[in-house]
Amino acid sequence: MLKELGRGLITTFKMLLESPVTIQYPEEKRPVRPRFRGRHVLKRYDNGLEKCIGCSLCAAACPADAIFVESAENTDEERYAPGERYASTYEINMLRCIFCGFCEDACPTEAIVLGANYELTFTNRRDAIYTKDSLLEAVPSPELLTPQKVEPGEYTRSIPEMEDPKL
Amino acid sequence: MGVEQKLGNMGMVTTTLEQFVNWSRTRAMWPMLFGLACCAIEMMSAQAAHYDMSRFGMELMRASPRQSDLMIVAGRVSRKMGPILRRLYDQMPEPKWVVAMGDCASCGGVFNNYAIHQGVDELVPVDVYVAGCPPRPEALIHGIVTLYEKVNGEKFTDYTDS
Image (cartoon, rainbow over all chains, first blue to last red; front, side, top):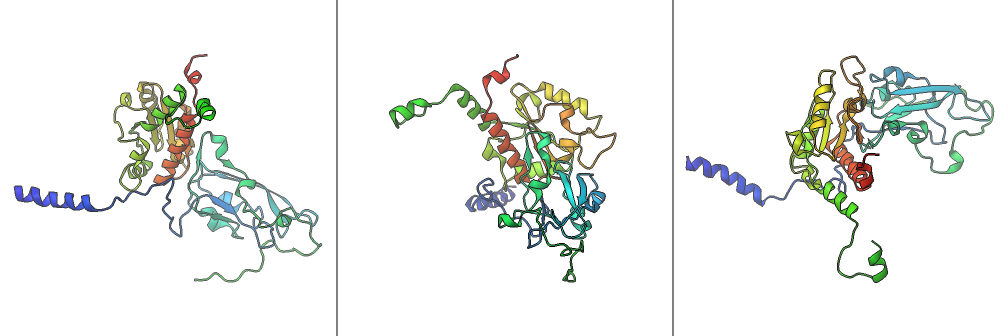
């Protein structure tokens, strides 16, 4: 019996010599996996126009009904997205969202992408509703902000020419 | 407080009673075991070696509500569980806090149906909501840090009946 006890204690004492595995979280963050799904980001094209065309396919695909989209017509004086329509209201309730990524799959223009941010804590439920302002990607320079004034007939297609998906 | 600013470093710490009480509350806040669903697995993970909530004064989860200060509701609360949750909350001694961990505890999440309470704030006052389905252990710890910020801002007058 003592032999077994000793064998067990060898493991215990071996562990004593090892360095602790604890990640000191708020200071040191463990990197997320490449396919991790965190907080959403609404993407823009390089010219600053929003990729979202307000089609509500993400809202239809959402199993938790966390997304609300309202669309409006683009004009050449006030252009938000290429094509006819853009999302005038885009809201995601982060407390409803289950981060399944179906919205990402449903999006025809790859406008909505689930990012790496998982630090979503709120002290009241109203703060959990993220509006379009907080979801949209930042622009590198202020002249790329939407709405933009463009030449008539420059943007006619909602979905731009895209290359085939890579394997 | 003001004394150090006027007289310089005197080799001692001055504080207000309020700050001291809040400091001590955040250094030993024992959570109650309230794992109801898959979020409980992440809660256990947050207590285990890699994330180690003991660093935040949460040495161990108490199984008894009378020994706990914080209720982490981890999981969906069914209509049948609701009265039990309220009863356990009432048995906790003041001051007490509630963290709604995960989507289901916060607002029902994907279970928008008759069987599940649409958020535990129907039953008990919630201090911090943690989003995620389930949230990562880091997200829970982030929620607890948010709660500590809230506790550090509390005043004695918040506890008086008015």
